[in-house]
Length: 214
Length: 298
Image 1 (cartoon, rainbow over the protein chains, first blue to last red):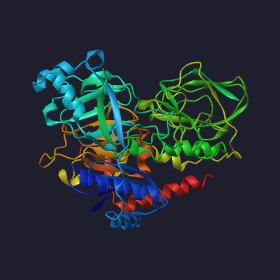
Image 2 (cartoon, chains in turn blue, cyan; image 1 turned 60 degrees about the horizontal axis):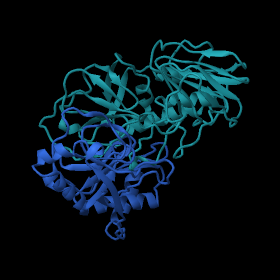
Image 3 (cartoon, one colour; image 1 turned 90 degrees about the vertical axis):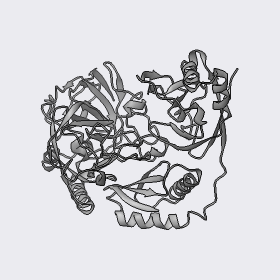
Image 4 (cartoon, each protein chain N blue to C red; image 1 turned 90 degrees about the horizontal axis):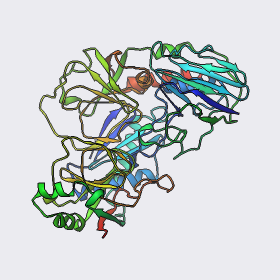
């Protein structure tokens, strides 16, 4: 474990190297410990694959004081109970107007469209963290056979709910936004809605299954 | 009382000091680009410093109230029809007009009582790129009518000279970034940089001599801070700003200190800017000193 200053108002707590489910669990536990009993001056937490960026208010606390608080919690990390993951099923209409790039993904991966849908919906995915934009899940667990290059020219608009593949990653766009990933389908579920509390459908640590809709 | 938008200007929206606690959901804090001006303006009209106000960008708007209002215009000089950096009365039906920015990028219209918009995830701030908060999640349009709140205390008539002076700095002070060691020492703090047209509340793209790492390396996506200076493979730095993406995979050479973030909010395309290195302890001392100057207003 390493704690490094990222700015005069943030520390990066590094809990491992690379992407793995073990490191992910340590990141998740640290976020829960810090959110559960926030040290004075804590402003925000940005978890990622192997680190947590801790934002603090330098008027209320100092870097040293916050670092001590973080170290205390890290000491408890391996005793903290592993949270029971939620399993979230995401219904997806693959192909057609809602998955305009399914055919290209099949061609690029040398599979039939049916095989792409089968492999994509058989996967057991993990939400490593949310980031980039509101509610966007960084998912791990896609079959390497589905890895295809991103679009050469990104779309200026990807509809909300689009299920897409970019490189070796897959994800769902919570909001309408520009995007360079290939769209294989769309879910009618809303991943980000201010009518809900919390506003996000998926949370860090969730397991995700894509269920093909007829 | 209501405010009516006679003309919205280039990009005018409701801001407070930001929405904190949601970066883990992918939502950056947003909030005023120049917090010194927002806080000072609110304190001048007797509001809590976090009261929602209008942030204008490059070209100001024109506004009317249907009652007598007390307002303060702070930030850069937009040639307003009333004196700036002090509380002034604006009578019912009178049109308050602002023009193009004469220097700097943003100004604030703070109204006694604050702007009454719903709190979304604990803040009235507009997050333009995701359409959250403020007035219907968007920049204002002609004809919009916004309600003015009731939450305020006594008016302050003092003009805080020190604060507007702070905002005209052209050398931003920075602490070393997480990947500072990837780059040659004086790569950032040396040359003069130019702010490009591709700059917004999400980030400011700079142009100047290319910054190249000693050896190209891959970085695993990690959380990023407001004010972080990222260097993508093209070698032209980007200052991440109030509506930044919450995580990223580009190396960060430096981070603008908290005390100078409001200065970033006043940079406009084609401005020239330099960077000066400071230590972490010095950065905190500068912030505490600035904080004292702002609190002296209250």
